[in-house]
Length: 302
Image 1 (spheres, rainbow, N blue to C red):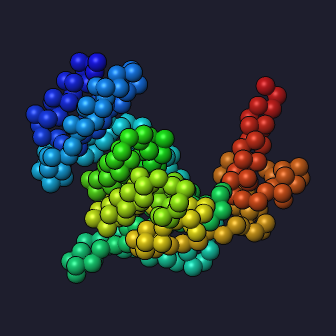
Image 2: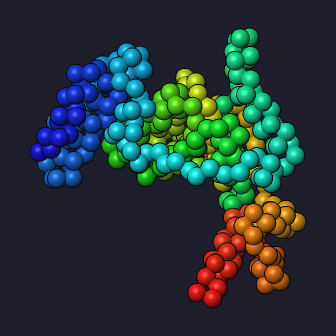
C-alpha cells in the first residue's frame, strides 16, 4: 500500500488546493502500487484519477514552481553558466537575430507598453556538437538567467496522460521563474503525427506540446533543439518565434574556437594537439581534445 508519507503529502496538497501537486502525487502512488504488483488496486486508483478540480494556475493555490520541484525534482537540471554570446562561433545571420532577441528582452517593459512582447520561443537545429546548447547557455549568461534542461527520462511517463501533464508543468515553471528552459532533442516528444507505427498516445503528446506553446507566456526563454528537424511535426515548428540553423563548422572555425578556449585555460597548442584538432568535426570534438590535453598538463610530473 501507499506509504503514509506520500499520503500525508497528498492530503496536504488537497487541503491547500494545490491541484498540480495533488495530481502528480496521486500518479506517483498509482505507479508505486503497479510496481508493487497490486495491479487491481492500481487499476482502481487510475480509474478514479480524473481531473475534476481547477488548474493550480487558475486558482492561485500552490505555485507550479514549488510543486514541480517538490514532486519531480529530477525533471529539470541546472546547467553550469557559460561565457557570453560573443564567445560562441555563430553564422553572422544567427548572431544578428539573437542580438535582436536579447535587445527585446532587455527592453521588455517598453515593448509591453505597446502591447508587444519579446520573442521567447526559439528553435535551434543542426548536427550534434555545433553549439546549440552552448548558445542557450550563453543567452542565459547575457540575460543573467539560470539555464535549466528538461530531463526526458523523467518527463516521459508510462501511463496515459502522464507525459502531457509533466510537459504542462515544465511550461508553468517557465512562466513563474525567469530563466532559460532548454528542451534538448525536442523530437523525442514532438515528432510528426500520423505515423502508422506510432501509438495514439504519442500524437496526444504532440498536441499537448503545441497547446502549451500557444498558451504559455514564458518569463524568460524557451529554447528547443533538434538534430533531425525534418522529423518534427510541421504544426509544432510554426509555434516558434525564431528558427535558427546551426551548420557544421569549418576547420578554420574549429581551430579559432580551440584557440580561444586554450587561451582561457592557459594551454599552449603544441603540434600534437593541433594535429588532433585538425581531425575534429565539431566544437564538441575540439572541446574534448582540449580537456584531455588540460588533464595531461595538470597531471604532468605527478
